[in-house]
Length: 104
Image 1: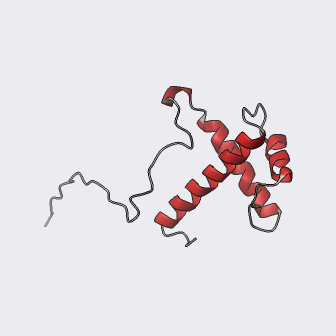
Image 2: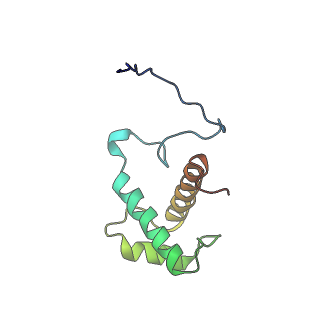
């Protein structure tokens, strides 16, 4: 005996309405460099796992140098890079918390 199933559109709700999806900056979609964000995020976590399992706070010059050495043609440097690191880390932690990966 076969059963028929019908898919219904659902609208997801989040337990923390303060979290919004989006990029780490407010720029036009076509101008945003997602590859650079991914490269920075990957470099951050390579640094993290090679240096005791934590991202230093406040962001250290050593972490900036590490990322600048690993990411060719990096478009952000100095304070702008530090800000991007903090935003990317916060976004990553928020997604992991929503997914039930770990509590912060």
